[in-house]
Amino acid sequence: MTTSVQTELALGELRDSLRGPLLFPGDDSFEEATLLWNGLIEKSPALAVQPTGTADVVAAVEFARDQRLPLSVRGGAHNVGGTAVADGGLVLDMSRLRGVLVDPEARTATAQAGCLLGDVDRETQLHGLATPLGFISKVGLAGLTLGGGLGYLTRRFGWTVDNLLEVEIVTADGMVRRANAEENADLFWAIRGAGANFGVVTSFTLRLHEVGPTVYGGLIAWPFERADEILGAYRAFTADAPRELAVWMVVLRAPPAPFVPEDWRGKRVCAMPVCYSGDLDRVDEVLAPIRALGDPVFDLLAEQPYTQVQSYLDDSEPEGNHYYWKTEYLAELCDEFLSVWPSLAAECPIPEAQIGLLHLGGALGERDEDDGAVGNRDVRYACGVIGGWEPGEPGADGFPGWVRDAWQRIRRFSTGGNYINFQTADEDDERVRATYGAQFDRLVDVKTKYDPGNLFRSNRNIRPR
Ligand SMILES: Cc1cc2nc3c(=O)[nH]c(=O)nc-3n(C[C@H](O)[C@H](O)[C@H](O)COP(=O)(O)OP(=O)(O)OC[C@H]3O[C@@H](n4cnc5c(N)ncnc54)[C@H](O)[C@@H]3O)c2cc1C
Image (cartoon, rainbow, N blue to C red; front, side, top):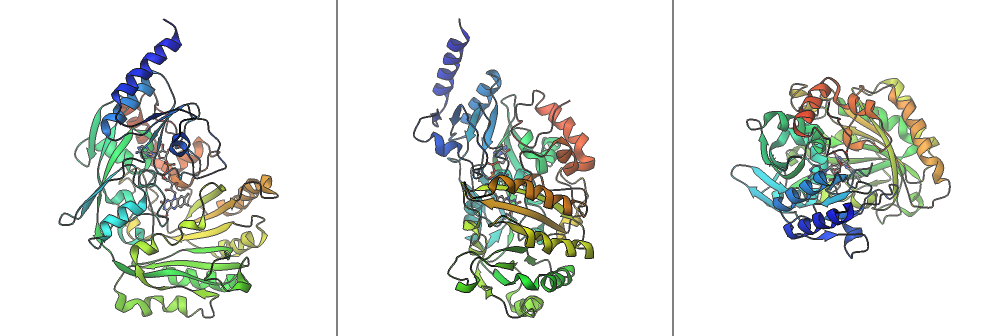
């Protein structure tokens, strides 16, 4: 029997065992099932499965393992490195699994692995509940959670994985396992920050907190010429801000949006995306240091639904554009950093670039460093040089190089850690090791136990021994 005949037989068995579609290049839905958010990454997968339940996931995992095919899992496809799709491999596209079950009494939500962030916020907010998730509603719950997860509620409630109670996961041996603090506790620990490495997670159970349904937030911006003053004020008020207040800071060119005065469109501004999820009676007092800066180019801060604050930036980084970025974690905003940071923005040749700062800290530091693989509990800010451009933009060949050079100028301020979910395809094993620091060897142990053949390697990879 020839190999191709064996493969045909195996494919026939796979087709028979699936309830969801098995797709090949040229099939109607193939492109949609394997599309990546980052248009810069080109991959040619061989086939895709769109599971309708855990049994389909088991069949696909066993097929890829037995056929020695590269396997990848596609959640929201937003990973900047394009790890959701394996070249020449089988893509498990989870997009048909988007159910969310909320238990308002127990304050938990169980979400299937194909959910986007907006799917979860939408259902939990029916009950005035939420868990910390990112601030672009089209990002996938799975990828975000498995790498740690951060957003406007992180200062109050920690990493997303600090709120993860349980997962269902299909491991490389085809077993369906439950992992939580008691059952398969080693696996659960590893999943909480390095989770793309150990199997296909099919559902996530998350702890919920009272949030909203309205919060105070939106976007406010000032001229870039005031960057030194604005940054100084940002450092001062984030130093003792209440945990209910999350303020990011981004230097970018103002988009041609209706809310931007016409003469400001395309000009550089210092913008602050804001979310205050505390007592609304205190909002004036809490936002006073921001409003005291005066004379904004625009001020869209207002009371609004939490789901709106979680989605109004959705179109700021459209799918299919090219993206390349570098990020670091910071323990503080020192004088030297503040003197370097605005110059990066001033010199940036990429029209749609964003030079960004996220304020973290708060609840992150309340747990032990080894509470989950995610670590990095000393981080108080994340900073990033975010390059984004349309395909074919003049000078684009040089943009990644510029981002790398700019990154070298901010690396020396890093805690030494960085966020695994922000790593690009060209970051090496040392970067992965640096992310996990002292937890790395323990992760290798868990990887060796559950995935000794490294079936799950289309990710920021932890190699088995
Ligand atoms: C525009 C934009 C905004 C962002 N904002 C935030 C933010 O606010 N907060 C934040 O924390 N991060 C943010 N991120 C980063 C984001 O967390 C990562 O890009 C993350 O990988 C996206 O998850 P995904 O499911 O969309 O990605 P995918 O590309 O589908 O998957 C990412 C990785 O996870 C693996 N994976 C996916 N599903 C599963 C599964 N079910 N089981 C096992 N492995 C799986 C994939 O194989 C892949 O390696 C943002 C990214 C973008 C592009």
